[in-house]
Image (cartoon, rainbow, N blue to C red):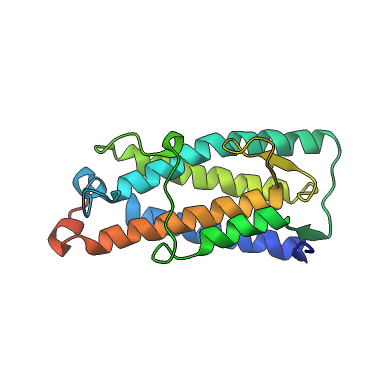
Length: 199
C-alpha cells in the first residue's frame, strides 16, 4: 500500500496550528485549576485532569529528547527538507487508531507511562505547557530537514522506527486525545467544584 503524501509546508502548518490551539486551551482551562480540582477523579477507575497531564508529561519526557537529538543529527549531516511529507504504513495505522474516539476504542497505558500519583502539584500544568512549547520548537526545526528520512525509535517495540512525520503527528494526536479526556473530566465535576480555581 502506498504511503500518504502531503505538501511539506501544509503538513507542518497543520501540526503548528493544532499545537497552538492546544497551548491556548492549556493556558485557559488547566493552568488556573486548584490542586483540589486538578486531582479530583470522576470515579475510582478514571484519571483526574492532573493524571491525564502527568501521563502526557511522562510520554513527552521519553520522546522529545530523542526527537531533538535525531533532528540535530540530521541537520549536522546536511539534511534538506523534501517537497512532500510522507507517512509510513505502520505509522499511519498507529495515528488512525489514536484518532478513534475514546468511547469507541480505549487503551491501557503502559506502566512506564502511567501517572505517578493521585495528589499531583499544580506544576504538572506548567510542565505540560513547557512540553507543548518544546514540541512547537521541534516542529519548526523539523521543517528544515527531510522529515521523511529521519527515523525515531519506539521505546516499547524494539526494531520499530517511525518516520519523523509520523512520530510528530502521533504525539499531537495523542495529546489531543488526553486533553479531550481531561476536558470530559472537568465537565463531569459538579459546577461548584469545577469553579474553584486558584486565585
